[in-house]
Length: 188
Image 1 (cartoon, rainbow, N blue to C red):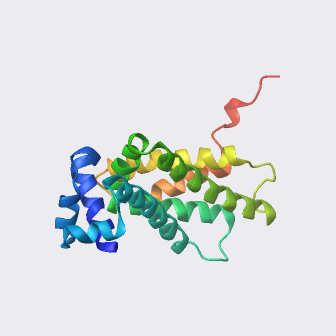
Image 2: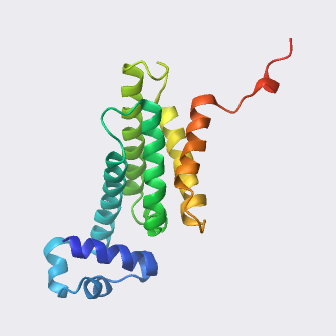
C-alpha cells in the first residue's frame, strides 16, 4: 500500500486529481492494476488516503523535531521549522491539500481541524505548565496554523533558499512579543 500512496502523491502532484489516473498510479508504483483494487475502490479513495497520509507525515515530522523537555514556545518554533523543511521537500502537499477542498470537502476540513487540534493540545500543555498565558483558545491555534500555512507557501513553496530556521524564529518572536510597539500605546 505504501508504494501506491507514494505513487499517488507524484501522480496527483504532477497531473492534478482530474487528469491523474489509476493506471498512472499503478505504473508509477510498479504494481499490477489489480493490486490497486486490493486496497482502494476508487481514485477518490486513494486521494483521501493520501491527504490523511500527508497530514500524518507533517505530524510525525513536527513531533520528531520536539523533545519532551522542550519549553512551550520552543515547541512552536521547532514545529514550524520542521513543517517549513517538510513543505520545501514535499512541495506537492500544497496542491494536493488545496485540491482536496473540491474533491472531498470533508477530508479538506478534517485535515485542518486535526492540525488545529494538535496545535491547541500543545497550547493547552503550555498553559498547564504555566509557560503560556491561561486564556488561549482554539482561535489562537487556528491563527498559528494559518500563519504556518502561509509562511510555508511563501518561504517553502515559492522561495529558492531554505530560510526555515530564520522564518520560524521570526514567527516565534511575533507570538512571544506581538506586533505592537511603544508607538502603538493609547494616547492619554
